[in-house]
Amino acid sequence: MLAGLMGWPQVTFASKLTAEGDGVVVERETDLGTETIVCQLPAVVTCDLRLNEPRFTTLPNIMKAKKKKVDTLIADDMGVDLAPHNEVVEIFEPAARKAGVMVQDVDQLLDKLRNEAKVVA
Image (cartoon, rainbow, N blue to C red; front, side, top):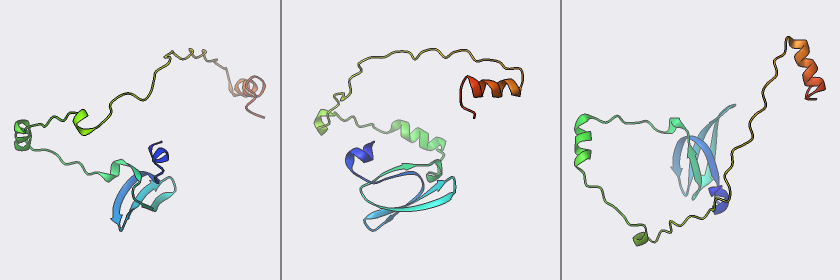
């Protein structure tokens, strides 16, 4: 939705991302294998788990992080509007599902699929 609203290209499930000129080369995995896509920037790119290699913290670094000062920024000072743009009109619970039907054998199942559900010819 963001890419559509901004008019930017979109690439999903990126497993490798490389900057090239004024664009990016994105490698993504599909059901049929690996696909390489080149697109211009700005673009919206969503990532796959394989894009990141997590780093594990050490105890000394955890202790250093606890002592670091955390800056607090005010949204109004940055000119950011935090007013909600959506209005919740109604919230309701979906209808309860009907209970399933137990069948005795495959023939009875096929009969119900053909005659009642009309999904099998």
